[in-house]
Length: 275
Image 1 (tube, one colour):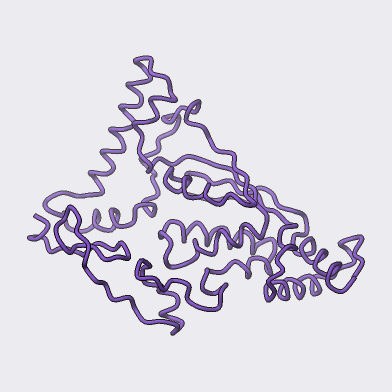
Image 2 (spheres, rainbow, N blue to C red):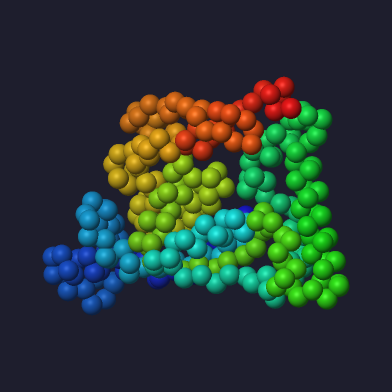
């Protein structure tokens, strides 16, 4: 997956600094050229220290999400406040127009990729199995289309792994709030990768705003993942803010009794146990 910054508010740092300076110290900004780069960056640093975040809504960023998996798209649209979305519709788009399997970004399914490149697990390479299943779904999709099934119905045989596309627009405040959890060690690794891409893109056009894209714990100044239902916060363990989570295997799953912790992590079974 690759994310592209296709448009943004001109002079985003000064655009955000202007309302802050106007409402705070009566700077009477009528032209952004009245604000120096240093004044803009200083204003942004002060905004980050305050609970008054309204100026952060004045700049916006548009991204094109190339090859975003369907499961990730579903999670992205949860960020409703301050975001708008334009999604590629599989009601009309031919899902086989280009090969979605050959160059698949396996970072989207990291544990399958990890196990699949090691020695076979129970005599089977999991990555090969997953890839064959992807191709089977696309072949079935094509068969349905040839049999006259509408694309809006045939698409239902395709799994959430499928890489689609989406364009988003959001205010910087919405982006900062939305990426905070995604930059967190609680996030899926593929989300962390995406959030780092966005941080780099914003930094390339507005360094002060890029610096403000940080994880939830850094934003709060404390670890916010303290429930027994939360997984380890690797970042705060590294920062010395908390100790590693101790798993309590008290939940039953289809793998057997006491095989899952409240945090959702499944107990790693020995090969003989799994069989």
